[in-house]
Length: 309
Ligand code: BTN
Image 1 (cartoon, rainbow, N blue to C red):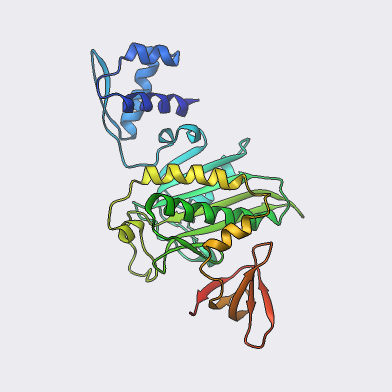
Image 2: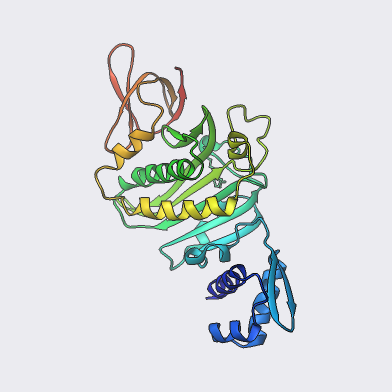
């Protein structure tokens, strides 16, 4: 596939600090030198600076973009856009015969969050939708989303040691501020999922919009510029590993260990109610159990959760 070839070329150029012979590269790839040159031209157009002379090709600089060929085994799964309205809108058409694909945008003009909120998506953040074809029973939908939240929090902790936690159901929090949000959209038949699109927005090196009072970027939390490619690569690995656990029983324990919400006084706005009480547990289907002041325990499947303590 085309992205595999570019991935191979890039890796060969990255490994070498001298010129890489064009005829050797073309032979390794079983393509003509003209075909190789076309791939090099496409890489240059994508933003890579590649010098060429009679000795071959040399990589001078790489763009700070999440281009598919940077992510070896995922290179043919990733659809990359410089600017689109929302990565949530592309998955429906692009998934076709794949079991999963990933839509990535450097910038979104109409990024959307939960409860129809606007999601500011300036350059420097990571915005992607992971689209999965599935025939799992419906109840796995919420489990899949929990696994994403776990994968993202763990990735941040493994790479940056930032003590990232989860606010129910799936906001990722650092220093009591939101660093990442997850939006899930699903198409389903009566009792089974057909497609689940998990949209993830991470504040990385982007400026936080002044309207977003309770948000933080990784750059701000760590006081350093973040290597978005390294972060995205680790996320892809960890998401893949977490998704393998979808049928395992201990997902909830792992999730609960990262959850900030338990034992907190919360106020949750649902579609038709406002529930105030103490978050006492998570049920097996990912719902939050809230004990109200009169002792009643309410099961909240989804809602906008505010921590009051
Ligand atoms: C939330 O409200 O917390 C969820 C935010 C989800 C934002 C991401 S960015 C990538 C994907 N595309 C969108 O338009 N939204 C999600």
